[in-house]
Image (cartoon, rainbow, N blue to C red; front, top):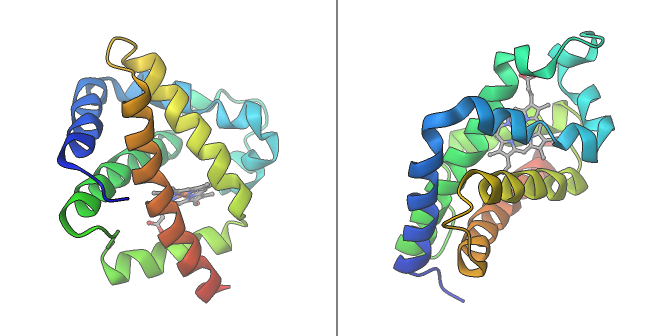
Length: 154
Ligand code: HEM
């Protein structure tokens, strides 16, 4: 199944509407630590943070925004070429850093749930099954590319 211009538009339009408020995106995204408390151990700067509030960690916000921005880029690439082409060097680095952090394939599902829930709650008026499917496709293809690179780096 190809990725259509309409699907790309759904992804980019919703991201444009929500990206002004990275603070609440990040907060909502931190829900991954409720779904998968073990994930907290992977982030070196959280491991020793005790009960300090998650929202005080700028790096977590950076990570949440990275996932959104890269899923948007993935949507554009899928529409253009039918494939996700993260720059070779960037993909290598992503593979290596996630292996090093102890990330496993299953964690990508957790992050996907956090991503979709975050969008649904940030733009409830725009949210449709078509929008959900477009984000899922963009994210899944990106995650597959990173996981592939993780296998090589392991
Ligand atoms: C680091 C993106 C999925 C945990 C990073 C970095 C980026 C990134 C850009 C910065 C380091 C680098 O550039 O190599 C993404 C994207 C994902 C994804 C686009 C999904 C499509 C995940 C998942 C987990 C995770 C599923 C596990 C819960 C981490 C950790 C780091 C990291 C622990 C290192 C943080 C640090 O030490 O500063 N990720 N990530 N990521 N990511 Fe991800």
